[in-house]
Length: 170
Ligand SMILES: *[C@@H]1O[C@H](CO)[C@@H](O)[C@H](O)[C@H]1NC(C)=O
Image (cartoon, rainbow, N blue to C red; front, side, top):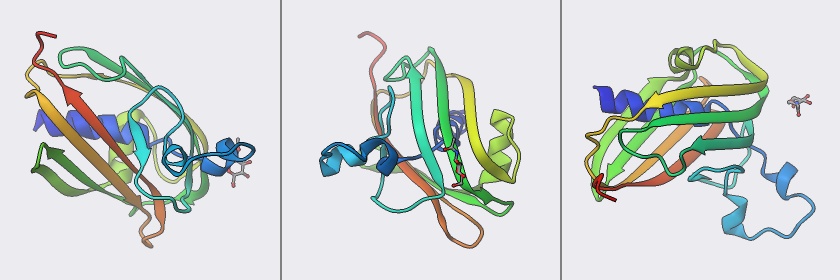
């Protein structure tokens, strides 16, 4: 399903590069909500305030927010503080309004091939990905959540985003 693929590529690219709250929030007073904000020009938030293996330095989307029918360019920069091996997985959930569109578990290493990366994932990574967003995305509010774990169920990162797609007449 093409739409699923698009959402997946979008998330993978974001997730592919995730997270440093303490590094960036270290010397300033940060509100709880801001603490969960992912640095850069993006609609992403961490799902939880917790330790994770992927430190996200920055994720930039162009355009932000994404537009139906336009090419979305995703640039992400982060650091895997521990190696992530084969067997890591993503629990992906997509809600459209109140309806749960997608709820599935996919293989992280398999998905990373879409951004020309292979497991084991380690150290600093910069990823750029262009995604063609279909024109026919049904307008409305989408909530996307990707929770990533190693084979041993250690948290790699969890990100969520709320994205609104308009009717195309905006
Ligand atoms: C990435 O993480 C590793 C392991 O924690 C650390 O040794 C390294 O300095 C980090 N790289 C950067 C650029 O921060």
